[in-house]
Length: 307
Image 1: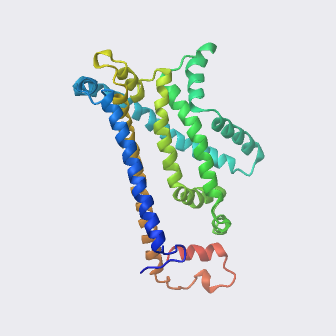
Image 2: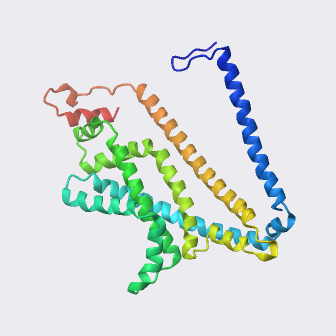
Image 3: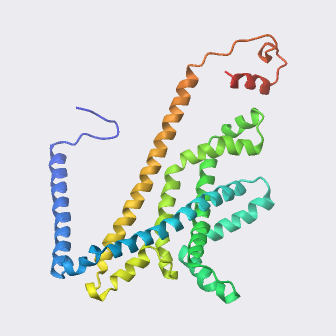
């Protein structure tokens, strides 16, 4: 029998209690699902008349077009959010107050304003001052402003969680501040915060659905149109199930890509550490700084880098 210091092996009474709770949970969940199916059947939600709208190829062509609109907004917003997040994170970590203060204000402002409010300000508010914006750009800019500021805080937290010795080691080998940030701190921060970054990108994808408020023709906008079709008895739940299922599949694909990227990074780090542990030291030749006590630390480290 396996033992653990963090888990007490249940006794006979605990085993009986756990089994009773498990059976009761299954019965309650099955009862709730059964009640939902019963209400659906009673209200005719499984009837062919309500699902018939999805048997037309023209409807699926419209879904594909709306899916393309959703992915177009998400793709550009995700890329620009990452760029803005990196820029704001570096600015917030600046040692100069005149750089750090305004960027901190902008970041907090973007984080505080809800995405929907920002979309409505861009689309409905700007025409009041003589500027008309396309719904696509209103959706993208609002998503970039909010998610870029959130990613900036995520990256800043990742950088500040690194041991202080990482930065000091970078300066010790002669790197400037730009090199320390670009070569040492940011790669480690991205690796540490990758799950949070991916979670925020999933939020970005789902927030594209807010675009239907400003008439951007994405998936939710199409679902609203399909659900109001009187010829098929207004299939509201059916449209929600189909469009919601597409969102679930897209989020699962994005999470799968992030998981694959994380595994590749982990394998590459393991390969580098294994290769480094079996490297033989470079032979000492005449003129090697390691032979001279007055040799600088940078010169010695440069020799170690060649090993």
